[in-house]
Image 1 (cartoon, rainbow, N blue to C red):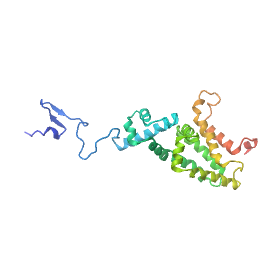
Image 2: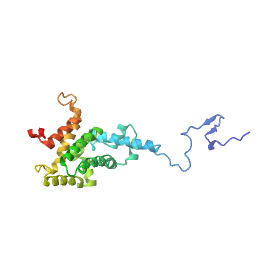
Image 3: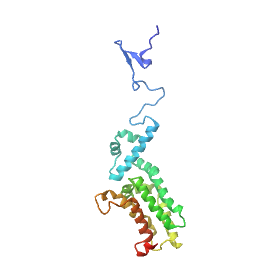
Image 4: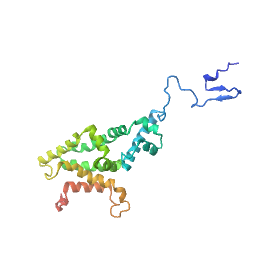
Length: 249
């Protein structure tokens, strides 16, 4: 007859009353050398990556809806239906979360927008046209972008704008302004334009309408306007102006 193993050495054992007790996987001791699981820690790398991405998406949606100042990590946890410990595992502070969002979400978008000028170094009309369409495309793909940009970047005192300026300064913005000024000096762009207002004007013509588009649903005049209509209008107004000569160009 085989000798019975001690109770502490396997998945099953015998109670003092003689009944067999089978341990569940959760009851089994951790493997030697394995770190104890902390509250909120993902159980696997794939799941952890998905959870982190979801938390970033939730944070962006909340920031766009109610602002960064009024959104705590606890609020993000509640919206994502996870424990606060889960959020704190990935992002220790809100500032750290903002830095992650800037690096992983905003910097790629800014690079895509700036690429319109790089793709058309000798054609400012093509560059501005491409930039307008990219703004609209980004706004469609990322619905949080228009309201968040209006609330936290365009508006005075926006926390996201302050954070981005503190990390990167004004070099990118100044480069765009300098590019516009050079086009003007070369006679390729209307000399009456204010270089520092061109990008802001384009944002106002595209992002602002898209940020308020939800309010148009019950408006019989505006509810039929599409994102393509917004892009077309912005390009026509900025490139051709409001004079009757614009229609013939």
